[in-house]
Image (cartoon, rainbow, N blue to C red; front, side, top):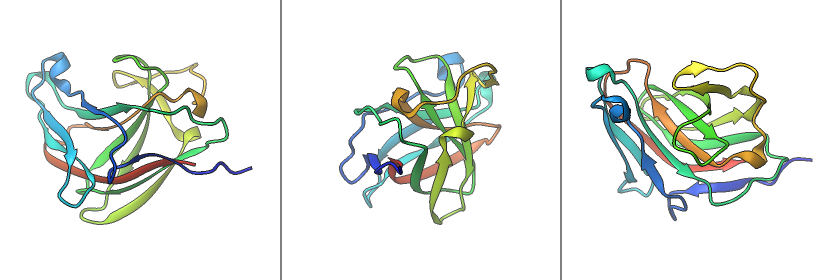
Length: 166
């Protein structure tokens, strides 16, 4: 049985409280923000810098609902700048811990709907891939977010229209 889509974020109504976590937590100087664009989307933007051993910018939010176990993917409508990002899922509310990531590359200036299967997310901790971690169960998802890294120095901008689980 297919799960009914659950919209966890629609930036027309902004349901979630987005927080910024940049490389400043380890001495870096990258900067970012998550704000509403003039056209009503979420805008994750900023600058990635490698200075002081930095190199990443991220935003994340705690989910306000428990997802049913029948969910198998996340679908996101977004417009990017041609750079590679990762969508992140955490199964706890902690600041630091295991994060499941799925990379996607944006098409500069083009709206896209990306589909990310929960089975394809990779467990990581501080950039290192972990083994012997069970796959994500949708009912355990507590946080979602976006991250840009991988030495993509300079300005970035990612518009997000909505995020839903199916």
